[in-house]
Amino acid sequence: MRVFSSIDELRHTLDALKRQGRTVGLVPTMGYLHPGHMELVSRARAENDLVVVSIFVNPLQFGPAEDLSKYPRDLERDSGMLKQAGVNFLFAPDVEDMYPRPMQTVVDVPDLGRELEGAVRPGHFAGVATVVCKLLNIVQPQTAYFGQKDYQQVVIIKRMVEDLAVPVRVISVPTVRDGDGLALSSRNVYLSPEERRAAVIVPQTLDEAERLVANGLTDAKGLEVKLTEFLGREPLAKPEVVAVRDASTLEQVSSIDEPVVVALFVRFGSTRLLDNRVVRNNRIAGITGGKGLQGRGQPGRGATK
Image (spheres, rainbow, N blue to C red):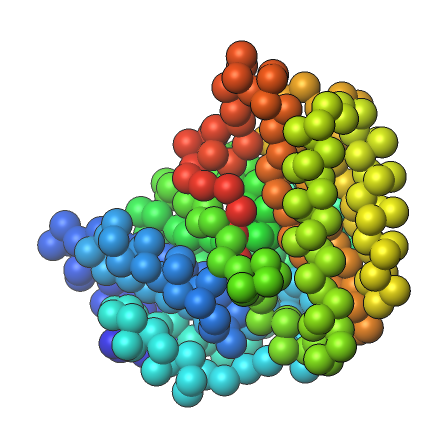
């Protein structure tokens, strides 16, 4: 595995290989890797000749009161995991490499970016879209892989790629979970042992959403109320977003007649956890077929960051 921090050196190397007809898959990460990231790497290796993994903690997507300086980092550990997994290239730039001068150009998908997580983290998704757009321009892969745990992020990136005619296929990969159902996330290391035990309420709430819809609940607002009440069973859980949205567009819905995504954004102490699940009214889905990330040509339900 070759490691690069220079944009020009990485581009020069990849350009020569692409001229030989080699295909490239990109897995963008912020590091502190876990098995969820490695599932993205596995998919990329299976579907491409060459795999590039980027590790970059992007300051543009952190708000002033957020945990940029505390975000977990261990490049040596991450490098060892990627080398063992057969990754060809690790792109690990410093902030000065990615942003040699203050950025004046911002890529934003404002309507999607202000919803859900974006409502409690203003500007976050503009930072995400900007760095992903830059990484796609640097690597110019045929495919790029993202975890569906960050469902809103995947929807935004897909829309950005479509709007800007970026020649890349965006693949969403199902969530990898611990044995108790909690979605793997680099931020799980922030949880105290008590908070980690309490956090299982998040996947349990998604199970409850599936149960309620399967039992005939079709009122979207009613489902949000019931799920908020369910989360309230855990005193340490402080829900910031409990939303039922159209699975493809993230638009608000009144009735669950088409597949919806149940999106949760829950705080435990100082740590925010995200999770989601696409839920279908089976009676309707059997007639109309499903949609969502899977229905739009992407595999799977569920993912990881």
